Image 1 (cartoon, rainbow, N blue to C red):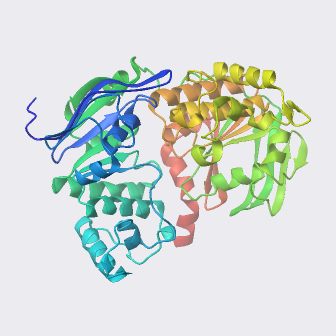
Image 2: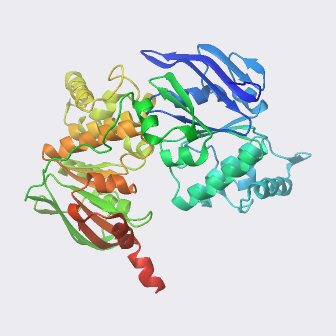
Image 3: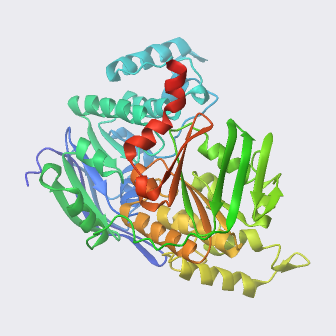
Amino acid sequence: MDRSDDVLQLQHIRKTYPGVVALDDVSLSVKQGEIHALVGENGAGKSTLIKTCSGAVVPDSGVIRVNGKEFKSMTPQLAAENGIAIIYQEFNLVGGLSVAENIFLGRAVRKGWVIDKKAMARETEKVFQKLNIHIDPYELVQNLTVGYQQMVEIAKAIQQNAKILIMDEPSAPLTKVEVNSMFKIIDTLKASGVSIIYISHRMDEIFRLSDRVTVLRDGAYIKTLMTKDTNVDELVSLMVGRTLTEKFPERKPCVRDEVVLELDALTGNGDSKISFSLRKGEILGLGGLIGAGRTELAQMIFGVVPKTAGKIIFKGKEIAPKSPREAIDLGIALVPEDRKRQGALLSMSIKENINMPIYEKNAKLFVVDRAKEKSAADQYQKEMRIKAPSINQLVKNLSGGNQQKVILGKWLAANSELIIFDEPTRGIDIGAKYEIYKLMNELVEQGKTILLISSEMEELMGMSDRILVLSEGRLTGELDRGSFNQETIMSYASVVQEEETA
């Protein structure tokens, strides 16, 4: 392949950590004005590879070439000087500062000793016009939606003259409307000659945006293909090293007559008079648009937010958990939507996370029984099939799928009977998704009960025994497995809005 128009070359990059080969002789090239997709399962090495470009990770060996200049490793300053910028999943913005102040963070325009806010706002407007973005430069970033915050991140990179933009799962927190707006900005950047490395688990985005796609697996380079010459099945097979003939594992009938959870006109946290029952061994799907009240309902059941009216009946007894601790003690668990901030303690080990709900039970006079601690961690690392060199591995160093397994292991250690999954596979690759689905099936086969909240229609229909649909805090529809239909679910999801605009 002709390398004359390569703006970035990564050659024979290797990076190891204790017990883990994160990157093993990986090479990649990116051309000017190209959108180059990078795909692979969680833990394949994608994030480590792009961090070598930004200076956040120093490779053990290999060469980085930017516009012909050769580097053994980068630093954040060198990356910026050579036109490389990365937009991570967690934004690097200061909420209490204005949009313009964030665009010029660390590079404030001054008149003498005084910061010139008007000048920064004018320069911000110029970048926004270039990208067709409509945001007030004086607005505080904390007042913006996630989608607009991402636009600010992109504008910040372009204002710093980035010519190589790396985007790590940029669509994960966005609504469909925000994703479409982001696509338009990416198209504009490509037309202006900016090169983009695009990381995503969403195959439709890979085929919508990219020119070429590179597959990594277990830290190794597998193949680079022209996107137009490949398909989803080929990419998935290359990613997981095997052919996935099914997206969802086979379901066994597990639903029993015993009612585990019953809600009677439950009201609060934006929801109104929600009533339904959930039986032992059932996976009950909860559908609806973003903002429909699904997470808010889970928060009331789990004691994060108190109800204002109605009843929660769990295993035949009325309950009103005033805190998550009370809900946990009752046998209710929540695998939250934001696993990094709410689900796991990332700076602590697998062992500590799994034991978190049961430390009080396994301690005498505030002294932890280390044998029981290790035994629980070993048991659930094995049962959850958590890929890690040891139970002492920090959770922050695990892939997204394995982090989710640690959270699930924690709730199994606590002997939870009702497990609420809120967007359980968000940001997780297709192979890891299948593993989570298998674990969910195993849980209901063991007699556990699951309330599944998902915005992915295929997931909702593929895993649920029944589906309830919410719209603007109200229950608007119910479907049994035999009558699942995407159009019907969407019509239920928009019932309230249609009635109000009729």
